Image (cartoon, rainbow over all chains, first blue to last red; front, top):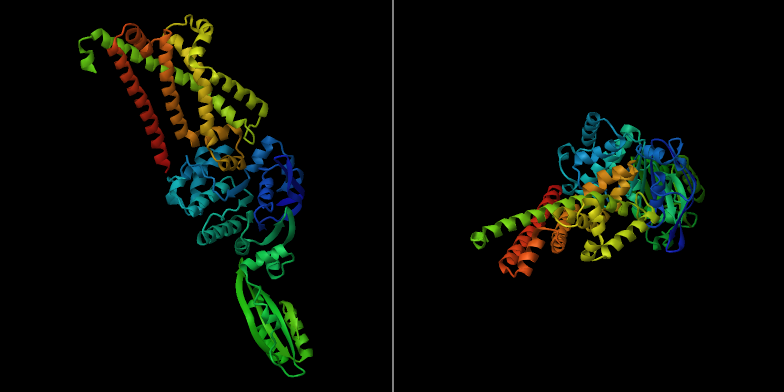
Length: 343
Length: 225
């Protein structure tokens, strides 16, 4: 759906060159929800704004739905933009228009026939659950309702791509969840590709299929959300993941040892469960098969988009040979095993 | 006030006529100055840096002209424009003739006041419209002007009130209206009554215009709130 090649953006601010994007390459598949996460100033906002050319890239090309958006002339670009919806952190609704007329706005711009447009607005208001608010002005709505209007407006011209620029960052956690759920529903219902940027890993965890981590103007990691959560590759990704899922535990546990007799080995391991395996009693069958003792140090289970995801830190005690076999058994069942300490 | 005028029916008539002339001059020149000043203000805003029709050269040239015109005191403007007024109207004396300098003096003022109103609109709203594929005309007509309507209306009131003051000055050089009345009867003939009545009528006029502007603007703001 989106293909970004060698994208760079340089700003000139008070005589200084600022590199906002450094040779970014990215592909977003049709129908997926793709998240870009980064701290403020990392370049994520510039990146998403390049996709509908609110920012002109300095170098590189962007293709959206088969068309090189970076090569279009003014008129073609306007037409292309009508098929790329965008929602904003500050909602950006027109205070001079009612909810109904705000959703009508992009249809007016596209020159849609009046009656057809009015019918479409009704449909969209129903979709976002604001039919009863049609005659109200934005100032009379809550933040969540405003963003719903924003979403309805973004969908008015039947876009194939929705860009979300920190759309939930101004909302409380509960409202954020309901907006994210709406985005997920829209993604499924219309097979709409969604590209979102955020600084909140919870947003990624809740709705995204894949994620790119941007740090210091560069993309440092791209992968399926589950992959990145279970095995982050860079320090930046690590800290984002840890902000949401606690993977760390008190350091002294790494050094404390359980008392054991001579030929018994001990390993401290972290087991990550993804999807279906989270529902099977693998640990207890390992204990029985290999005659081990297990000391549970720490564990939690979470949900990434719709997939259960857990991790468990265990101290495993047993015969050295069997211990190794036991770990191989778990790996064979599709669990991610990380050995934290050998003794 | 009527009592004051009671035994002077000629005075009542003169005041009524002069009031009407003032209203006529102010309204006509307000409308005409917006006809030119509003587009000029829109151009000043939209050709500025990072705006929808960015054009530095045009922006600076227009900005300088506006500043130059605004720095000429109105009384000098009146004299400078006499040849142009004669050319356009045929005379430089009277109510109709004074509309020319009033309008020309108000255009740059209106342009700046419109510019200030339109500048208040959040960049995010303009960006949202651009992201939907709107062209410059659509952004001006559907975002800038409707969003700034309350502020623009207050600007109209300020302009009209300014023109009341200017029209009084025009009156001294034979422009007609309350200015002429006050000058001829009040100043040259020491008719204090006429002078005071003129002042009171002017106060009422200005008060009325401000209230009208405030009310209209508040009505819109309250509807949107």
